Image (cartoon, rainbow, N blue to C red; front, side):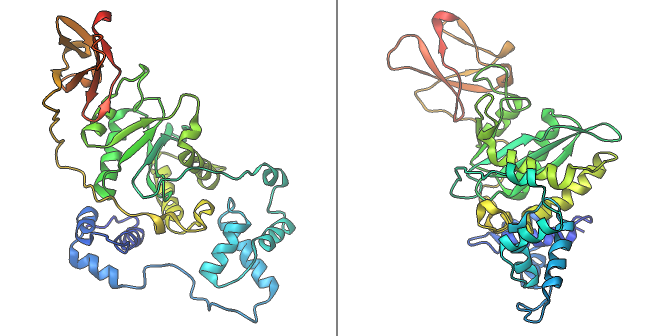
Length: 369
């Protein structure tokens, strides 16, 4: 059966949301989700995919105590949600109107708001890309101990919608498992225009301007790669904020046995975060309501590298070096076996701009070889 046996309904809901977006390619989505077009269109016509309450839109006879009890019960389900989110969900899912200020008053009266935490809360103001998949932010949430081993959560977030692309429990931070998870994400959601990451491994290199094997793979796929400024994690601010939410709503106060145990919690919460949890930074919408899959499908094999007729093309050899005019110049070991292009600068001072596909490497000077 093509649907995952763990979260069948969640995957159906995600498919329907993505396929219902304007200009969605339903046939391509069916292929990415591994289902037939007949099955896809069947679920598009169904109306019973939501687990929302069937309460009436208005309840004129509802007692204030009942509304408060409903709010307190909702808070118990989501201890990290504040009055604004809870009031929105009461209206959206239960037809109960309550002002955010009233919700906060009720929570304080029941001792459910920590005054110190309330004073420490600050608003986040960030630049937002105009469309989904213009930028994905990628990082590891700090590792934590389990009963058996350590977990390194890999997270990828769409900048525009805050839609969580990837939330996976890994046992290390090496390239191979990261690339495997990105490949799965590309097959499901398509290729983004750009991915931003920090300067650490496996995507960042200790040498300024150098590429890693993961970076080479992304560039070959046509994905632009950018890096956060050193010591400035706010460059990936939305993913950093996602980490705070993940810690508060999933990790805090919970003990995990092993990686499968962590992943079960991650999978369930990821659906909650994307499809149920209102997000204040996007007007109390859910990330899933603002996200669309990318029209750029991942290719079956890496495309060939081509450069312009005026470029000086060199194959990177042993030690990550190339040869030009009797000089051996280093461009990076991750590029061994790849072709790079050299373009003389207009001032003709022996300096070349160096490109790998669309990515500009550090310039090379023949005098320093």
